Image (cartoon, rainbow, N blue to C red; front, side, top):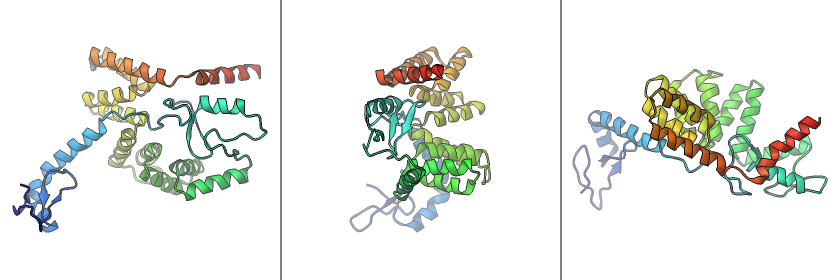
Amino acid sequence: MMCCASCGVAEVDDIKLMTCDACDVVRYCSVECQQDHRPHHDATCKERAAELRDEILFRQPESTHLGDCPICCLPISVEFFVVSCCSKMICDGCSYANATRETKERQACPFCRHPVPISKEEIDKNHNKRLAANDPIALLQMGTSRHQEGDYESSFDYWTKAAELGDATSHLKLAGCFYRGGEGVEKDQKRELYHWEEAAIAGHPDARFNLGNHEGVNGRFDRAAKHWIIAASHGHDDSIKILKKSYVSGLVSKEDFAAALRAHQAAVDATKSPQREIVPKFYNSKSNFN
């Protein structure tokens, strides 16, 4: 039988207990009981909340923050992708294939098949439409544009809104540009780490790599290795490189390094396709021709 942690009253039909939001362990019959019990529960609550946070943080994401290409359904490489006019992440292979088969003077979007905006007026109109719909990608792009212009206040607002909608890259930028770099806001390591973590949970390997570096600098190599291994399993090259150095230094076991190598290679192989292989060859030949 569940009872209030403060007064001991049992949960019955006419008494519903509420759970502590932070630790999800103890229950209370009222806000007053929760406040009275806080001095006795605070330390345990923080410890359990940290454990729950770690369970989420070190859970292996199913994919990177980019997910799969909506056309070929293969994982999108963290290095090669394009954003369509409808804010869909498209792999470079499908974008190239679409461009080569389009015979019309004006190409259609590879995803929505509408004519791709060309003029500045069309591009701005389309982008404003995506902003009005609170599209996270459009908000991210606008925040990036404002940041490049030096309008940090607007950039912060756009990235914050996109982050609240779950955009991992916006979390990454808030952490690196603002709370770490101090552009327009005071430096705040706690907020910086929070945004790194949110981006990492959403599958951003760069954020995961940065968290590993932070843990390594502070001597928590077991936690650092966990972050790097997760990032490496998504094909993150810098993470596999630092794991190699850590293995040579004796900080990572042979078994963990071998498993990370296999996972890294599998992730890289999963992003390959004949269409994607053509793209760099095409641009290299075009560059050499010019």
